[in-house]
Amino acid sequence: MGKSKLLLLALCMCLVTATMAQLSTPPNGGNQKSVVKQYIGRLASVEIVYNSPDVTGFNGQSRKGQIWGQLVPWGFAPLGFGLSTPENPSPWRAGANENTTIEFSHDVLIEGKEIKAGKYGFHVAPAENGPWTLVFSKDNNHWGSFFYDPANDALRVDVEAQDVEFREWLTFDFIDRQATSATAALVWENKMVPFKIEVKDIDKVTIAALKAELNNSQGFTGTNYQAAANYASNVGDHDQALIWADAAISGPFVGQRTFATLSTKATVLRNAGKTDESNAIMDEAIKLPGANAGAIHAYGRALIASDQKEKALEVFQYNAKTNKGQWPTNYGLARGYSAVGNFKQAIKYLQLAKENMPPNAAGVNGPIIDQNLEKLKNGEDIN
Image 1 (cartoon, rainbow, N blue to C red):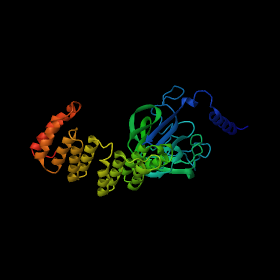
Image 2 (image 1 turned 120 degrees about the horizontal axis):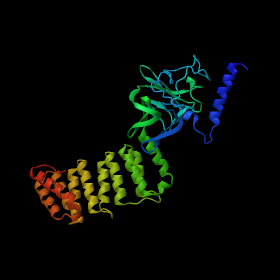
Image 3 (image 1 turned 45 degrees about the horizontal axis):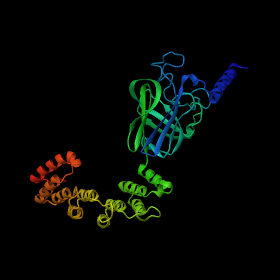
Image 4 (image 1 turned 30 degrees about the horizontal axis):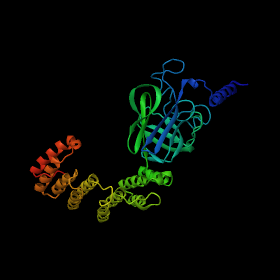
């Protein structure tokens, strides 16, 4: 048998052995398998599975200064096996042994470019000068990059590598985490290769998940409809928010007409710009059980925040009449009169609030009341 055939047979045997070696034997070449997973928001996730080589190498000899451009060739290079030829050069496998893979639970943007949910083979073409190319391949179960085929590329993006402090083991980190995005980074020896992953329409992703959950066992708990309505309202999906708010009030099994459920619907209506409808709902809500002095006070403050000052004063006056002498009704009157510019009356009721303040509220509210009294005396609104 010729030398070339013996070499090819030996290489094939190594590949077969490595692929089948699932016993408790050491990893091939000391390249330990690693997994990192990061959630973006509560639902979307990114998982990277890779084999992590070290700079020193399995034979104990340091390869420091020999990684980039030597052990890992610049650009796309012919590997002399499989599909990797001078005519079809391969990127680097972004690790060791089998494909590094990256899996997205939802559709995402990589450096602003779209890619569908799924698992991809992840490859990198380093550059001695200029940007590095990241390759996301529909093939995700090959050994290394020997069988890389550009026809299976799902996405390519270019990013800038950065110089960093020495890192012995190749590692994937998530170096920046935001509400709708995370930046992943390959770090090895003296280089870091970051790339931003952003969930497309994360609010729609969450709304879809909430719909599915409320069609399941979570839908038998009324407060879940309130929570879902508040979320949808806050992200601008007012129609869906109203559906869930109505379900909390009158839906089968879970619907209850309470201060809490009506308050939720009123908030949804107010966020949708339906102020009169919101106020009408709250006029009913504050007369229901559960509408205690603190809850009504909070509603009055919300009205001030939405620039409904006269309406807020009406609510504070109702609260003082219905819950006479209770904390914080006098404080509410002070805020209401201050909002409409009647500082004399505001001072009167703020002094009463200070005199009738319960001991457990004195530590926090005492100094604030004193500050607010000074503001009112200087003709300043305390809201």
